[in-house]
Amino acid sequence: MIRAIAALERVEAIEKICVIGPRDRILALIQQYAGNLQNNKDTFVLEQKDDLYQNCMHAFVSLIPGYEEGVELNDAAIFEKPVLLVASDLPLLCAAEVEEFLAACGQKNLDYCVGMTEEKHLKRFEPSKELPGFNWNYLHLVEGNYRLNNLHLIKPFKVGNRIYLEKLYQRRHQKSLMNIAATFYDFAIFEKMGFMPVVTFLLMELCVLCRHLGLEPLVNLFRRFSSKARLSRYAGKLLKAKVEIVCTTLGGSAADIDSEDDLAAVERRLIEWTQ
Image 1 (cartoon, one colour):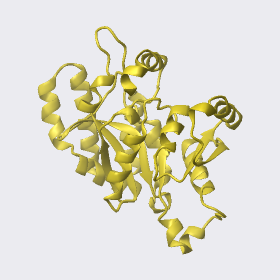
Image 2 (image 1 turned 120 degrees about the vertical axis):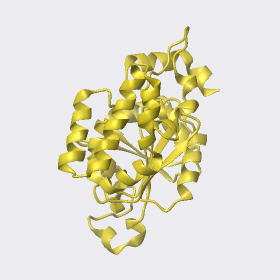
Image 3 (image 1 turned 90 degrees about the vertical axis):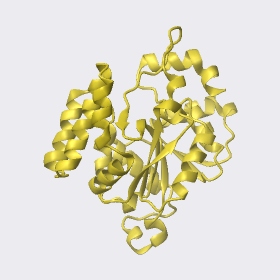
Image 4 (image 1 turned 120 degrees about the horizontal axis):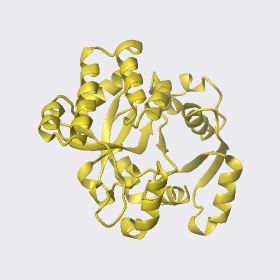
């Protein structure tokens, strides 16, 4: 968390930082590692709510001076206000990658920019014969293999179905059959996404399975039906917003700590990966 805050502090475009979680523990950590921080931004620490959606919205509206519910309907500046959402478990995040992401987002007129990183930029974080690393699944698209990273630039008030972001985040790891089944049900039945989005989702899951089995020809066959543009369009339909994928190249934003093995790999190779 401290390394993520330190990276955000070095980004000029960021005006304020809001950290949300167990407030007392976070404040203690910030005080303990104060020497690693510049303390050059207004930084707020808020107690966490019941779920991710509530946390994000609580943090967002807390950054709007004097916010009252509904004021955004009569204030275009608030209605259009963006916020950068970043996970805290990103010890390899660097300011340059955040700046790369924000610069790319600034070239587009979107409600939600979803960060992704291509596999070729993440190879250096994978295990070698001698050293531990991250073992990741990828989205196999016609343009290449991509991993969702942890950078999201969003205008919350312009995303009509923003509460669904909670489900998307909870199910982001599609190794779980329960996550796959729940996502399929939502797309096909609950959200009524239509035939092609459901088929695209199933083909992307087949790609993951085929790669795991070493069936690369089938991966290359099925990936032809999935593209960044198509995924952006389907995400926009699902969230009722203008959505697009924005890619970064440095990779630290994709390396979130999901297990003890991930943590051990970072501790072993931190100097190598941050040089």
